[in-house]
Length: 341
View 1 (cartoon, rainbow, N blue to C red):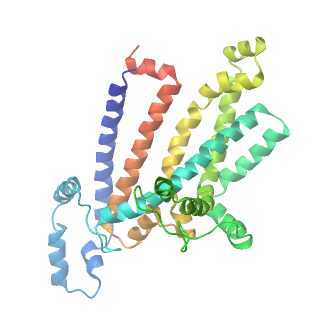
View 2: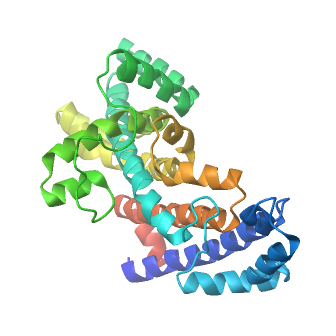
View 3: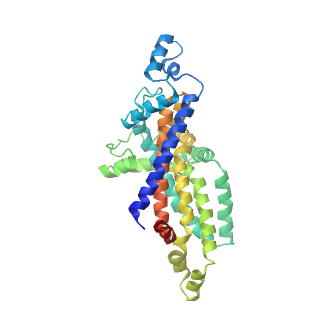
């Protein structure tokens, strides 16, 4: 497979998708009832001041002209000013995005590790009490919303047993590490601040597990189904007929082709965490971009709304590209198709 051509094709498709997303989001944000200029200045502002701000923001122009001015500002690094924080939106994105990325990263690790592990365990002991128990928990975990899981964990492990902290990313008495990436755990390791690293891990446990639970059991079900289906293939039967130990058969011959569907769904679940985390972030007072997005929507903060959705769209697109690359590596047939053989 020509990797450069493969990547260029995926990036080209992604650019068109993001342009289409920006147009749709811009039109919807502008057509929502209410005047952004009036919302920015408040109900007591004079009509003259509102009209001047409308002119400054080009709100008196057509949607095509407004979009042209907006896209020009975007390429200049200007995403507008937030009505909520009274700061440039780009500064808000830089502040709130790393927190959600860190939360989604640890949730994704939980989903991948425990989901695949439970799937392998369930397939290995198919139709036994182990398999049945995992499947029952899987149905419960998938059907339970993340915010319900968050409330239960918060009450049990945060309030009653007080094992984990329940608010924010870091305890007040712990010095924050020097900001490098914005991810406290990574920055703590880079600066050698072990105290901050361990404290940040404790703060991550409850919200990350709350977000990961549903996806974790989803990956477990997919892994189980895929492994049971592939276990009937001729090459697996041949490996077993040669007397190869069952553990070797599972991890050497069965595992790699069986996780291809899991990886695809895992990428989508991970990307969806970014947008679905708002209730969990509200419950744990997590200063992330999902909570910020809900707040700006309630204030009809048009520039911030568009910026948040576009950032989430970019993250979703990048994750899909990464998943395509991983799946192409795992499945040689995809590489043959890309070459046109």
